[in-house]
Length: 196
Image (cartoon, rainbow, N blue to C red; front, side, top):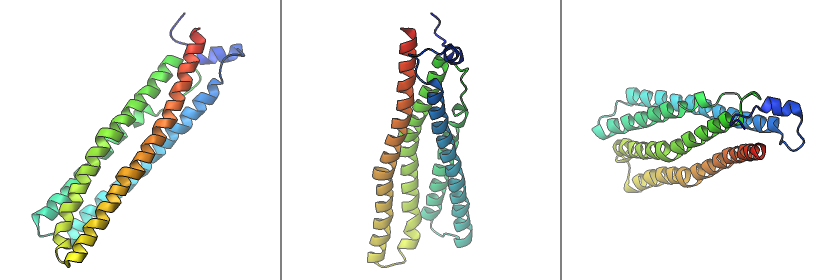
């Protein structure tokens, strides 16, 4: 038996035991569209953040080197994250029923691996560079206030970063993994069922 299974041919034969392949394709397309839209929103928000950061640098003319290094680290973190995240775009193409199961499954597995790399390696680097950049940036302006102001400013900033790291990031990653694992599992079931 061939390793490439033609879903369209199988669907046209109307096998009663075959799963609803068009439903799997539709679910995968919805997931891919959702990921694409999330990347596009992220591109817009992070690009505006870079523009705002550059404007702050130009308008406030920071004097301390730590402030300038902090701004540079924030911009580098955003640019590197944008570049690596956008590499996921070519994998998020619309599927069709003429795609064979092996190729489709391989594409979904590549998307899963790319997301895992982005969520573990790139997001960790992004948060580290951003946190260090913000810390260095805040030195010049926080030291103008009282000790209570400094502690409050750093405390609130790092509480917000910790909330995003431990809660929002974790919840988002689990949701993404659950959605793509569901599609991969269904495709593997289709392959197993059709090869039997």
